[in-house]
Length: 110
Length: 115
Image 1 (cartoon, rainbow over the protein chains, first blue to last red):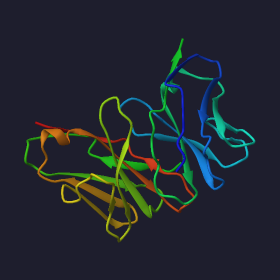
Image 2: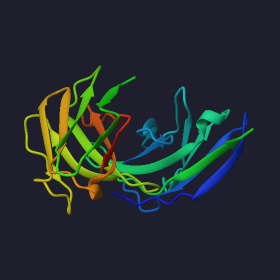
Image 3: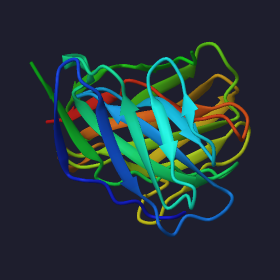
Image 4: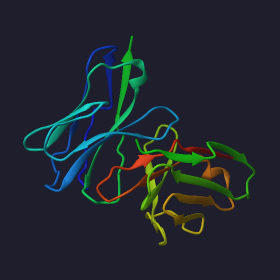
């Protein structure tokens, strides 16, 4: 599975959009981009995933570049409860492993 | 959404005892379950993958006789840490997935402390 690169940490003001970037320049055509987050002392929470098209659900939007070498997770109106470590993971469709990197620590501040 | 329940959430026990952790998928059938381990301020590390009715596949460096995994039904997997020692103290997290194209959903983890 392709490796991903994320910034170590980011700050965001409460109520503003949080844009979390992820580079996956070696992604293969059959690999999906998954986003999870982990709030302190809890298990990871699934957020969203996509292959080529942009995706949106009740939690977030996922924007994938046309060449699929990078993506951005958007939390449209960040709240203090969105403070967490956000993981961007690429995985082959139907593949087993989710390999977690270091992720991005997002701090939402009032 | 898909719910995975993990029990217990925290356990403290003496060195040498065995500890069993349960992972249940509450509202879907989990054909595959996964066990992860996380040390403080580190990322999750996959320990093993189990498919219902089959033997678990362990990651390199994970002792299968130390960490016994049973996935006897489509809604339950267990991890038993045998003869636990202080270095086994960690945060253990399970996840479950239905069909191949569905995302994994995680339990809330078990914090294991061995004295």
